[in-house]
Image (tube, rainbow, N blue to C red; front, side):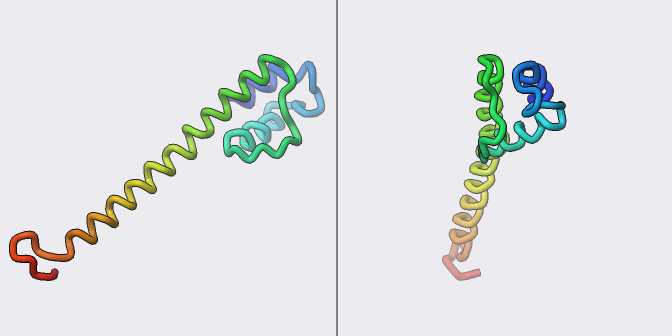
Length: 93
């Protein structure tokens, strides 16, 4: 979706960089994954605004779930270490 929006925002100013919606998809993938190669970037106010929103969406879409999963795995590992003995008698399981 951001690829199509960016195409319409930037194509008239940068016809080579944003030549089609699939070409704009390269920009969207690089921006959402926060790689930011810099080979294609927006120059219009609308394009830059969309780029900021896309970068934030990338953080929410990739980084936030990754940290939540990592915290869940860590909690499970800590819980497994606590269950090594019987809570009533203390005998090892």
